[in-house]
Length: 121
Length: 106
Image 1 (cartoon, rainbow over the protein chains, first blue to last red):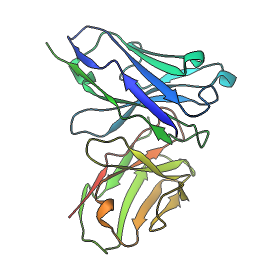
Image 2: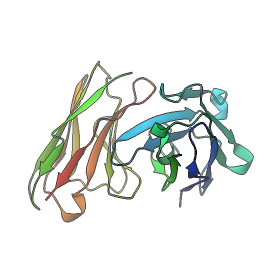
Image 3: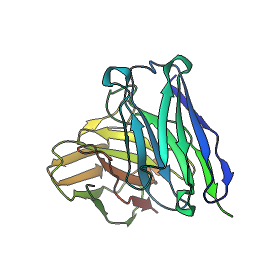
């Protein structure tokens, strides 16, 4: 069974940093792109960013609201992706999901359950 | 960014009803359109890819159609498990953007 598990969420003050992890099991991690998607309380879904597979040089792309503050990386040997979040603001408060295109090669077909990040003073 | 809109925002329905949710993109996205279902406290679930491709395990009462900028998701006979929020997503241009969601409620 394909499984993604996020960790690292918590309470952080504005201006602080946090690093989330997304660990995978049950499928080919290195051949897949990994996405981070967030959902603010009571709101819709927003793409934070993605990291492509090795064959695409691990290229990264980000949404405008986090560009320059967030960094996505991955360690295929550990089957883990990361989301480094710096200069956090109140509006970054959300559940952060990781998702991968493990089955389709493009669409977000496998999702983790999410980890909650709260930015508050 | 490509903007996605959905209508209605909330849809009141009953078991057995046929419902349709509309999704519009701010520019043409070809067939790069997916639909997700999300229930409270859980992650989204991919239902449909490439406008009309049903994912494995998704009941055949779900169907998608459209092209260019206008798309729709239909449920032919609503079941109790279908009460949820539905999101469309464009995959034409990154960042892939989602519609604001349509809540299907009793």
